[in-house]
Amino acid sequence: QSALTQPASVSGSPGQSITISCTGTSSDVGGYNYVSWYQQHPGKAPKLMIYEVSNRPSGVPDRFSGSKSGNTASLTISGLQAEDEADYYCSSYTSSSPVVFGGGTKLTVL
Amino acid sequence: QVQLQESGPGLVKPSQTLSLTCTVSGGSISSGSYYWSWIRQPAGKGLEWIGRIYTSGSTNYNPSLKSRVTISVDTSKNQFSLKLSSVTAADTAVYYCARSDGATVHFDYWGQGTLVTVSS
Image (cartoon, rainbow over all chains, first blue to last red; front, side):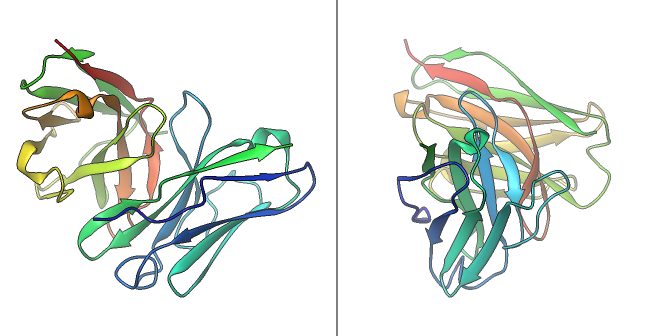
């Protein structure tokens, strides 16, 4: 069961937009619309930000959006704010095991 | 508001069995179509899904850990538990319990996490 592939780090200035990619295979990301994204601040539990590719839970700002094309899912954060600095993880349903996570991406707000 | 809380020893000796319990409050563990999972995170590393249980008792495990993992549920106590056998230093991590929808496997509620160190 291989982890989904994410860039190790991304950065952006306040007010800008950034996109984090999450690449899998047709057995996970590409085969199902069950991609989720989590935000994790240091020392804290992950927080669900996006589910089923593009749905936002109640309370998550609409600056956060998700999409998918083929075997790659993406998380876009627009109007970047200082408090968005965190680690971000994607996850997907997979045919070989119910869940697989990405390796994580560290977002730095410059 | 559903809340999850992990509990158990913070230090386990190599080759022994790691045992953790997750207590669910703010709702019955038996209500709804939810799965209850264990997820871990070694220091400075990413998340690894360990396994999950449905209130019926059916389980799914990460294939890489399957031979060492047992997850059980006690609906009378609103708890579910993790046992990981034959631990090594590589099993040192923060262990989280979490709830997911059965079909879409997104985790909407998480415990705060508990650090388990494997060391003699």
